Structures are given as C-alpha cells and as structure tokens.
Image (cartoon, rainbow, N blue to C red; front, side, top):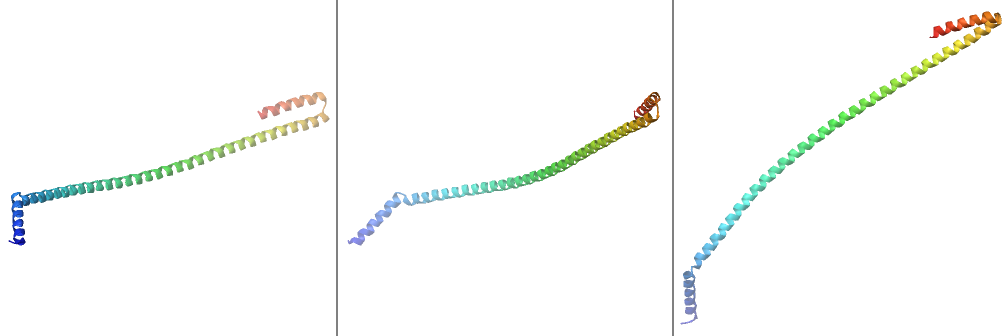
Length: 159
C-alpha cells in the first residue's frame, strides 16, 4: 500500500462525502438562483430602459411644444411691437397735424389782428388828416359838426 493508493482512497472518500452532503445540488441550486437573479436584473434593466425611452420621447415632445410656443410668443411680440410702432407713428402724425393747424390758426389770428390794427391806424390817420384839412378851411363850428358826423359814420362802418 503505497501513497498513491491512500491518495486514491482519500479521493473516493472525498467524492462520497461531497455526494452525501449533496454539494452538486447545492451548487446547481446556487447557480440557478444566480441565473434567476441575473434574469430578474435583466428584466428590470429592460423595463427601466423602456421607461427611460418613454420619458425621453415625452421630454422631446414637450421641448418641441415649448419651442413652438416660444416661436408663437416671439411672433405675437413682433406683431404687437409693429402695432405699437404704427400707433406711435400715427399719434405723432396726428400731434404734428394738430400743432401745425394750431400754428396756422395763430398765424391767421395774428394776420387778422395786424390787419385790423392797420385799418384802425389808417382810419385814425385819415381822420386826423381830414380834421387838419377841414380845420384849415372851415370854421370851428362847421368843422366840429362835420368831424362828428364823419367820425360817427366811420365808426358805424367799422362795426
């Protein structure tokens, strides 16, 4: 009996002990459990991936909607700015027209007033000239009567 025989016998005892303790079944069960855990993890990862793709698609849709809404806001703001600019131009034009009309009215009033002052001055000069001419040619009483009647006539014509 040499050492090889005892090594062979020890190997047989070890194998019998492994089979008796059902180590291959435990290893198989452990591997099956591990395979099941991996399968569960893969299913969970697949589910999470699908959920992430759905979220990505939803966020992309929301981004497109937000971009469209932003574009609409910009278009509306441009339209409103154009309307405000047109309204400001129209108000400015109206203001200028009113100011021009007011200035023209003031100029017309000043012309009318100047014309009336010129007429009044011309009347006063004419009356003074007539008075001077009449006084040199007429007596005091006659000239006073003529002057008064002429003055009344001029006043009635002016009014």
